[in-house]
Image 1 (cartoon, helix red, strand yellow):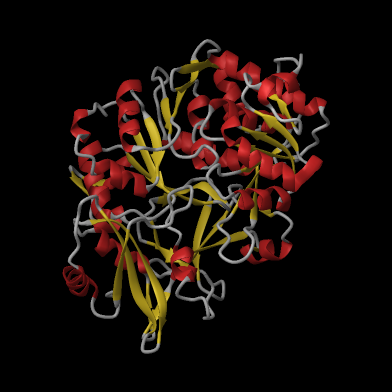
Image 2 (cartoon, rainbow, N blue to C red):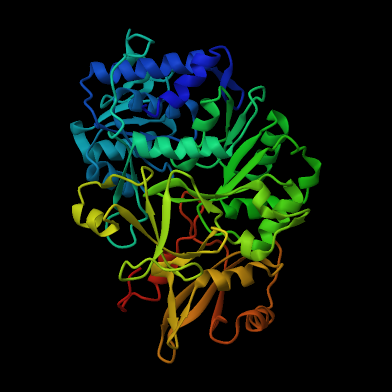
Length: 523
């Protein structure tokens, strides 16, 4: 089934139900479905062929998301663009991935103008806002004008399961980002596994909160809700007060946030003043989470937390740590369990392998390798990188971890983040867990920097809680007591804000670049 079916199912169940709430605007399933089908038919009318690349440049907005659904229904391939990225980056992705259609929001008209100046007429550009046709520049079409009188019904075309549904750019550790090709099948497996974990009764109304960028994981994470005929509450951005107000006002039942946003949430002084009792499932992922801050989240929100472990190449559901698995009896589980990623999902196979591709026994650290229909098709236009990542059907994730005797998977670190200091391997995540436990610390990142004595010196970059002060020597003493001298940072830097990706993941490569400019290291 094409990914659009995960929305269309909600329409079939109850057309009059509210599909989206966005500020004061409500979209029923009937209205959203009709709009999306018209976009689908207009794309097909204009000659869109299977796997034609369609990009959407917009803030969180139901109309923008329904254009993604429309592209899937037509057989197109969605290329996600981040509306806050530098325009040069968006131009590069549109060209690298051979995009032919761009839907854009009028709030990004200045960016669209620069894109047109670079791409010219090879890129068809359509302004999403249906009420601004008069102000649309000559190189683009207004939505209402472009749609014309096309039908508001599904076209009945066949979209193959193995057609590429999404090309997602990787972080681009060196040079250009790679384009991860996921099919309707691989993303369908992701959504199916989420539906297994988010277990609602038939009489429960699902209310999903889309606060993280819908251009990335938050958009796909609406599909389990719409497949059940639920309502998606759309926020422009994950601001702390807006999140709390939305959960309280709309009785939100599930949401996803990266750890860095959760850290701000649990520090909010008026948290207890909001009614958060409607929450059934609070998903977190995209980056490691502090065990100390996770424990506090469990105390504040109750048994609702779910860790989601995946990567772009195997999206969103390699493993889950379910709500009940955060506990041991009536108490919160110990750090070993909280630091795990849960057990592998039923529709994927996970092995831990060494550098020679040998399967390692329980408890030994190695590269996490994944096999199954969840795995990507490959990297767009890059067969060499595809062959390196997928060998004998196994995706080599680049993540280091181990499986324990109960089958729980623990992610130790990224292969490329490993620090070799004084001849010893130092896993940054272990050091970060200790630093996160300090009450003054909001977030941190540990990296290796060149050092004549140590080869790489363990270095911590720390972001503090609002109004907090840090005694660096006190922090180092905490690290020495828990980690010993080798893993204790040799230096600590304090920053106002760590560099982050659109998903909230700290960009360690950006932190390392200034230290490794004239050195040889894979960053």
